[in-house]
Structures are given as C-alpha cells and as structure tokens.
Image: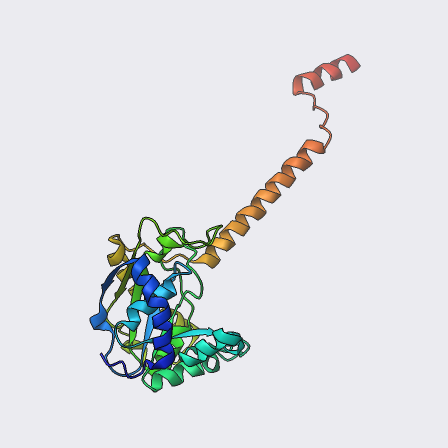
Length: 280
C-alpha cells in the first residue's frame, strides 16, 4: 500500500515508538487486507488499555495508511505535544461546540481528502468487567452517514495484559513478554441507513451495528463467544444507584423501628371476656 500520506512527523513518531514496541512485545496481526488501499475511510476500534492506541497505531502504520486520531483540541496548543499532534495530522475535536456535526467537521474533511480517521466509539476505556466492547457513542456513526466512507471494525487484545484498565498503579507489566493482537474485519454494511434522516434512533442503530462488528472481530481474537448483549455502563450505574437507595430506605426503616417504643400488647378475646365477667 502507498505510504504517500505518512509524512515527516508521522515517520518521526514511528522512529521513536516502533523500536520499543518491537523489542518489548510480540505481535499477532490479521486482516490487513481489509484496510482500503485508497480513499478515505473510518476505523472503529475497541479500547481496553491506555497502551492500546500505540498497539493499533503500529498495526495501522504498517499497512501504509496511517490513522488520524480524534483528540481534544486543547492538546494541539501545548508545546511539543501540540507540535506532534499538528505535524502528524491528528484531528482536533471541539468539545465546546454544541452541534455534533460541526464538532466532527475536521474528521469529515480529512475523510473527504482521502484520509483514515480512527474512532474509539466507546469514548473511554471499556467498563465491562470482562473487557468486551461496551455500548458506543454515536460520533462514528454520524461521520459514517455524512461521508458514506467505509467503516472498518478493528479489534485488539493484549495491551490490557501489559497495562490493565483502571489499575491502581498505571505501570507496565512487561514480563512475561505479552502479545499485542490486532485484527481488522471487512467493512460494515451500512447501506440500509444511507439517505435516512440522522435521528437519534438511526444513529443509535448504526452505532450498535458498528459495535457488533467490532465485538465479532474481538470474539475471534479471543477465541470466545460473542456476549449476549453489549455492556451498558449507564444502565449498570442506574441499577447500582437504585439498589443503594432501596438499601438506604430499608436501613432507615429498620433504625426507626428499633427506636420506637414497643406498643402495649392488646388483650386477647378470652382476657377481654374475663374482664367483662368480673365487672358484672
């Protein structure tokens, strides 16, 4: 595949990052034939470690079609990091913008110029306890419908062994030597949604289709069955809060019952009859 779009700054980043990746990790890569040789496209990637952007970028770099990551616009204004972000052609996301289509205007422009734009649709490290892809956000779906560009699902696994998500100590666990597994699948068929109004419902459906395709690829990489349904962190949080409220109510009711004076015992019917007889 052509490397005409890589450029000096991306090659410099590769010179810095590739040697330690080659030395410290093994690689198990599949599906490079699914990366388009020409034209703009989207990759939708799962996220289960702070290290996996490097793992995926290494894989993608070796296809000759480098990814343009979406990142907070503020990173582009700070020192050497900003210089590298601008030089390597990363995509600024303007979080202060209220219109979602405008927020991703740079991504749309890059795709229309023939670039690869990489999305992490989950928006953060997965919260699924089993580290399957969780329910995604709709940004990738919105850009896919705007551009009609191919969407390539990419699954990765192994970086989470070297740097587990949400670990108390964010340090590398290099021994024994870990294998970084990356696999790209065929383009997701979204043709049924082209021409439809991008309503919240449509964007949710498209996002679910994309996330399902990523999960299928990850199931192959892990050699496991696809989960019955994607993990929804918001629903989990809602259930936990509801359970906490119910537990608090039960605890309060128990405390109230313990502090109230005991009611005087009511006489039985036979006792009442005896008292009435004595009165007579």
